[in-house]
View 1 (spheres, helix red, strand yellow):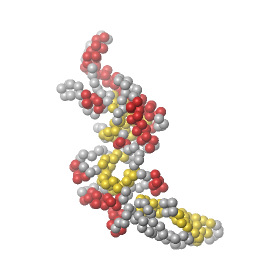
View 2 (spheres, helix red, strand yellow):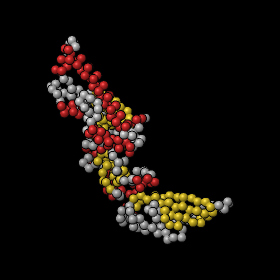
View 3 (tube, rainbow, N blue to C red):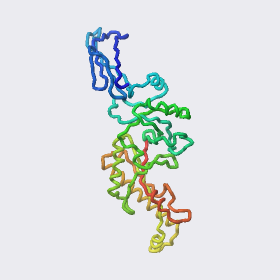
View 4 (cartoon, rainbow, N blue to C red):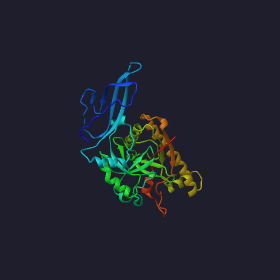
Length: 342
């Protein structure tokens, strides 16, 4: 626990041909002592510490100075806690693995992950049960999965009761994990949704183009700054930018256009021409987004563009009675991206 004293014992053991002459202990908190110093120490802050011991001696055969370095991870809890309860809990629970050398760079908290799923189940009471109103959904871009977590804390031992409750309710894989903070999360970039083939897509917020054009406005460029920061923080991520249009039909204008060309107007012909036009327009818009992101320092090899026109609507462009559905068309006009793996 914080401020509780402990001592590191170093002995010759069963080593042969290597007689310990001296050793140095680096406690991982700017405190280093040598063999002849008093070896009692305590930590003032909770968290994972990496203790290093450098041992020097004389090789019996060559008479040269040799050294060995050993490492020990020490988990320091917040405050005085029941050691028996700690030990019992540590036997039951596993922790997310992370590189101790990078501990100083980590800014985050422990959460209890009760479930990981390949698709969003945030509002599914049959799956999340009593936790449905308590959990937070986190999308993990590296595993392409959703985590459902609760109980934010600096000390994972605070999660004991939630852990036991989760296991009683059938969440046998519930585990305490350290989630990093300070970086933009993928779910912060926009609305996350699954399409019909199970791909995870993120609809970017406030991305707009000139009417019937493909050039980004200034507000859109500011919004793309968040995606650019995310890509800089996650250099392994490769994305595909998708641009979508709605499927609006201006019948009066189309009739005039057909008549001017001496053609007979039909709905099928109108739909075919509009779909082809929107597909080309969306391709230009997707490329425009990729070009802008690339100019901001993101490797073009991590970016792909694809215009989907009106082929992937989120909602219907028209109501059942054939009337216009403005709110549906607004949602269908969008720029989204998905993480792709090679």
